[in-house]
Length: 174
Image (tube, rainbow, N blue to C red; front, side):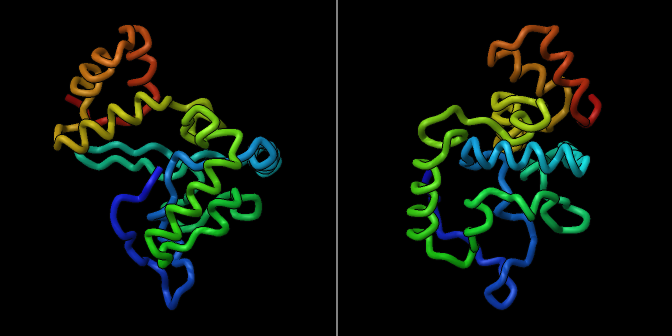
């Protein structure tokens, strides 16, 4: 996955500001990292951040980024790609690093299926639901239940599956 334009620098004096702008739901991780994270979230009873959806506001950042306190809930065991990333790097360095992490990953890399961390660790939503939400947002279509239901139907979801999905996430009512 290549960064299409120069990234923005959100650092404070060259150090991470914990803003969460780089905390995306799909990152390349190894099975070793996955196992460490699973143990850590179980041992520390870590709950995922809610997927907040309001009209035209969708938070598709990492389920471990605490938006209120601006910190990573799994900082001590965060994946290597996270610990080595700094948004002040050049586009070229970011793309080179991303290729490196994709190639070493067992999960979410070029050798594996793209899986949001929410689904991987908490069995919440799947990739197509994220894509449907991003489609609505990108097209400036209100993210209400009716519109999401229509897009999920086009993607091949059955009515029963759509009901389960809509019950799991907060959406603006119709």
